[in-house]
Image (tube, rainbow, N blue to C red; front, side):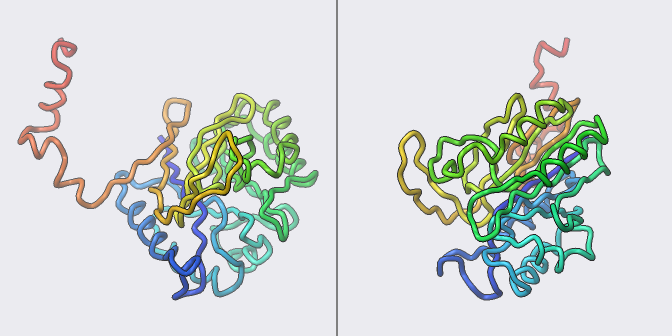
Length: 284
């Protein structure tokens, strides 16, 4: 069993600054780090799927780096539209956090039960995604290297969401990805962020899990085109669990207060005895 935790869209600013003058994204990331560190059992790795900072630069990436340093599990990063992969390489290139390098800034992780391919959908000076021939070739070659079950991490959702301001890039940008994935059934899950909205969709027969943001959420209109509303709350980290040949995805924090609120303790019964009560006649 391998446990991957995903957080996304952390949007860290320079120390002491608030996003839009009101949202403390640094405190939200501290809270997420504390939640991840309190999980039982600890995850095998943490993927942060882009928009690490609000504006890329030495001061913002060093602040981000400081905030994630307490994480106990290994951490891996991918760029989002607010990031700059070249600056990320300068800042994190001598660490295990971002092994991607020029020109694609993509990489594979082969240390777990499933393989992870970390992709780069960043387009310079744009909110919109890009995924050109060099990146497509890298993806094809990486998938041809191994039939091991594979998870793909990317920032922008490679699917139609029904949210108009997210879908304004059109579908053409991810058609090459879809064609490659259709030839490689070892790909079991795609995880992404960008939209500040939680959603489950698909690319071909493969599930896409789009996580909400650590920084803030957007309440987005679907079916009709209207501007989104701003919601300053953060969401809990997402756990992607590889179990018996497939992924199970969803929230699974283990807050510090849980130990005192466990139902075996409140019932005054040993957990094994309580499970026998739950089984009832099924145990016979």
